Length: 290
Image (cartoon, rainbow, N blue to C red):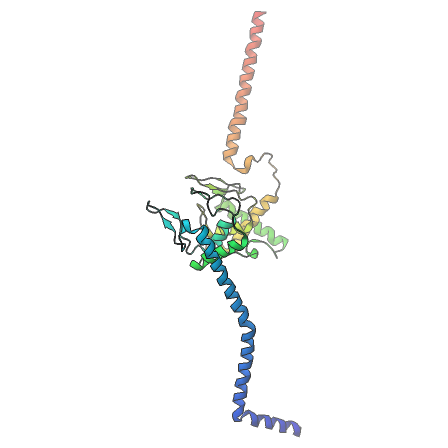
């Protein structure tokens, strides 16, 4: 007990000494310097990698996109007021680039009312670089993570509830253009709503977020990320649901069904009536001649 008291007294005296503060300061500097040395290089490497990606994206942009969108993504106006060769990309975000370039809609083969999906020109690394450069021009929607548009981690009951909610949202907001089963359809002024069958969930999420071409923009304020995810889950469920009604006629709704009814239904009835009338006339002639 006495030994402990003596030791405590010595420590107390040394703690009050003039060198104690210096020792504590040196220890603090040593610890903080060690932590900085361990963490700072990783942050510096990440920033350097991002800077290199933006620089690579700018090279690709100047070579493939600047002709329509301008050297700085500011857009190029035409002689006709209110129209542009290519719109400004400032503030569209990385998600818009990932959607347009990742689905082959950009670069456009030729000017038109609406960009059509076609084989992708760039690799995914090049698309990421282009998206990073456009994102550096102004704040905008980022490329979603896989967890944003999939139902991973949800139970079977939660999945069914998500699909049901997504179906209600889709039938309320999307069927006017994309039809009740996502088969797409015609739009005014030469546009069209593309089919959503087989489209990757990431691109549907980005389309909802950015509103490409004639599609309205469903920002996170209009549809939450969870609601967008539920819509994608509903569309995925349509691909797995068998067709119980026989011929689907492309799933285009009343247009194809009405055309089928007129041509095959009423046309068949008219043809049958003509056939019956012609055979009835022949039989009467034969009887008269006999």
